[in-house]
Image (cartoon, rainbow, N blue to C red; front, side, top):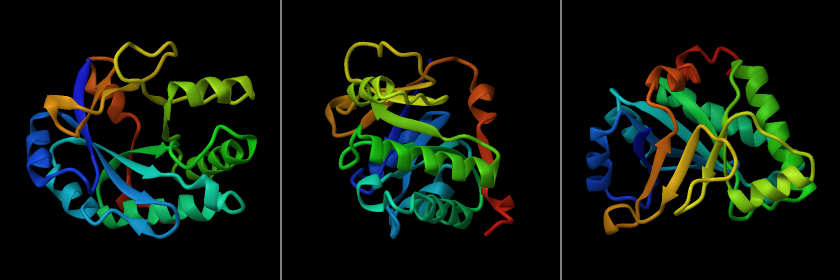
Length: 195
């Protein structure tokens, strides 16, 4: 397994600098239709040697009628970063394991796949995933949030704590030791010719 941090606006610059020691880092890029994390672009540059997982905080609760517009806003932000990214959709918080919100998530995934040729990871906690599976939803690439014990579902990424080093810092495992496997999920945002 390869450990890494995931960062958003709420993480300190020191925590970001400490993340340089890891071969992988996850950084929040966008939220909903209009929010780009103010530190996304500078952190994209900072982590020029790492595999960067750029995650979008989904607002399926607000944009369920047009999730493709939300997905497009995410891809536009990645294009501004002008580098390779592993894509991930963060499905938590205000989103619910309802048919309406899950349908919106599936539409976002399909839109992103159509535009980029790559399927994003889905970040989801284990209880929401259990409910999604009960409703008949399944996702190919999972990033499961389950603090403490290992998730019961197979996943590529696992967020195992939100209190790494006694700080408010999310820590994750890439579940295999071969970084090249994760790199196969990268997209080159410089090549987003559809924008």
